Structure formats: C-alpha cells, structure tokens
Length: 228
Image (cartoon, rainbow, N blue to C red; front, side, top):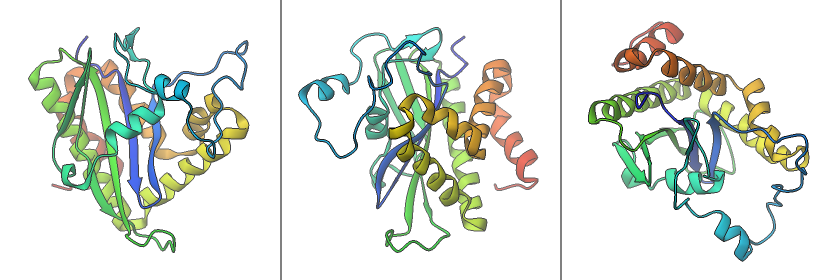
C-alpha cells in the first residue's frame, strides 16, 4: 500500500509569482454546498481566519489513501522552492505525509514582455506515506527528476511548458467566477499535461511494481527518444 502515491502535485514559479497549477486526485464540490463558501477574491487581504485555515494540518492528512487538508496556497508555498534548492532532491515530511520531488529550472521558449528573466521553476511533487521505504522514496524522486528532464526538453523544443502553464493559469483565474471546485476538472479537460499526470497516478496505483522503470517507459513511448 505504501508504494502508491497519495497525490501528484504540479507547482510553478516564475517572475509572475508562485502557483499550484494542478493536483490529482482532487475533490469536487458537492451540489448541496454553497458555491461561495470557498470562493476567494484575489485582490482582498487575508483575514486572521484565512491565515489559520491555510496552515499545515497538525493531524492526519490521509483519508482513503488520498491527500487531504492541504490548501492550494499551502502546497504552492511549500514547493515553489528557492533557486538554490533546484535540480536536486527535495524531501519534506509533515506528520504522516512525505513529499518528494526534484525541482527543475528551465528557460522559456517564448516571448513574454512581462517575464524578463525567462526562467521558470517546475516542480512535480509526489505525496507519499511518511513510512514509505527508502527505496520507494528513491524511485519517486527519480521519476520526478526524469519528468523534469522531459518538460525541460519539450519547453526547449516547442515551448510546451509555457503553453500549458499559461492555459492552466488562465483557467485558475477564470475559476473565481465559475467556482473553485470546477477549476481542476476544467484543467483536466483542456490540458494534456494534466491528463498525463492523471494517467501516471492511475498507472502507479495499479502497477506500482513497475515504478523503478516507469519514468523511462513514459518518456520512450510518448516522445520516442532517449534523454539520458
């Protein structure tokens, strides 16, 4: 059971700021819940209640083998790491969850007058059981590293990451009027990278024994070339 990930989280950071772009699995809002309960205005200042609600959970964050209790803002703050922590293993244990990733820096292959640096951090984070074995943690770190290599290559080749992150960011911005609960579902319908994350999560949960070679296989079949 400890082999399967609890969640896969994609975070970006650039000159425009930090943002959690996508997470899977995600919860959808029930029909009988008021839509304005979790709606936030991006231009309002945080209140004391908002700050308290955004803190890291102090107890269990696992429910039915999925990650619970972490807001998008908290996850974005945790994983939009500083440049000094990029291109190396990142590991963080919080209560009963262990997060592991390999933050990757890439250079945008697109012209954007508002982004003078041209540098973007992408971080694909796997949330695991805190008691996951060292070998399992090592495999997930390796997978995050390999996926970073893929994204960096595709950005250099055709600006794929810039196009996908812009699309996801636009959906998040529009989500303030459509209801936050629908944002990730819309991203899943529109963005190929979100579909890849979903498929990767589903495959890892059903064929966890193939985890050590999963990163190689997904890159070979998807891009039909070797990167390392």
